[in-house]
Image 1: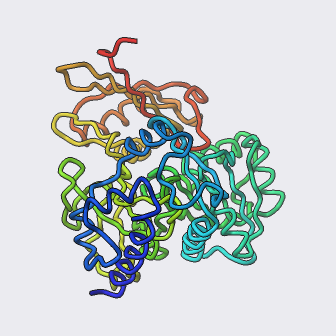
Image 2: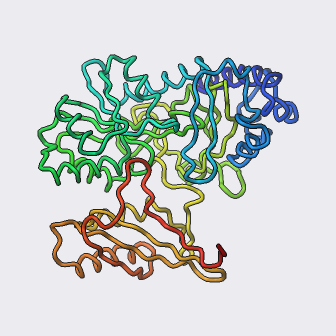
Image 3: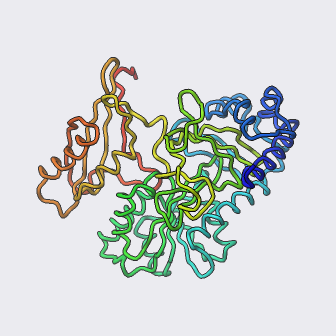
Length: 428
């Protein structure tokens, strides 16, 4: 058994032993599966314990308000409250003990070390500091790493830019979309980002950080700064960090998470190199744990060796490739927003875009794309044709493309919502 597997098995045994008699949500499941602290193989855990879904957790919290039964300790042992953003349904409430919180801070310090962020850096956290987990853990982990941290909540984009420039910030934390939005605002207000001190932009919340086209756009907009990708979820915490020497690969923090990649339909493991859904088991966040949780994220476990990547942790090639519930079947092809994102951004002159999906029973979904032209673009027809040809070469199908004026489409601070579904069979 590999040392990594042995460490994960030891932690999983401890977790199971802790949950069997004290966690009302997982205790019965573990007993029914015949799993206890004497577990002999990780494979047995994956084969015998059913997956956990977000729907199950939502229903549990609705039936047992406000926090549900997935609590390993008495309620007064918890000191942190967060909830999911609710973009794909009702928000989930999530609690942490001090021990679980420290475990997440340890994970974020792993991310910071990989990104080369530490003492002497100054970091701006450009997000709202609401009840979703966001960069809360990153903020605390960075302060513990002797980084000067500035919260950017409750501010306009222009105010954040002045805060960043005036205080000579070296690190920016935000979503990929918001990094581009800040660059737009800087340009509108004659702020030269090439003169800023920012050398690292740590992004999360969207797949864009590992999409080469999005990375290039951000780094062009922020001269002298390099993009560093990361991903996590409120339910599980910070999960991955980018390979420092090989962009495009996200490494799982294996000491804190047991990873599985399965077929979204059959839930059977998929071979390395094939796309599947990411399942996670939180090995250290024991206060409100998750076992074999269906994240809904589509990933591809890399076939590259540790020697090739320079690191031994589980590697996800291309980062987060998309979401299971975002997938559309267009003329027999599986299409994910991240793929269209890359295609559209490759077409020069696009400042922002939106995809409208029209669904109707017994008919193939129809797509329509609106692209907002960059202010420097004069030939609107050429831009529309350029985008349409790129999409057609990928799907392949002809998609109508409309070019709209600068400033027409919405901008986003957190997760971008560029895809809008119109279900014409649904009655309001």
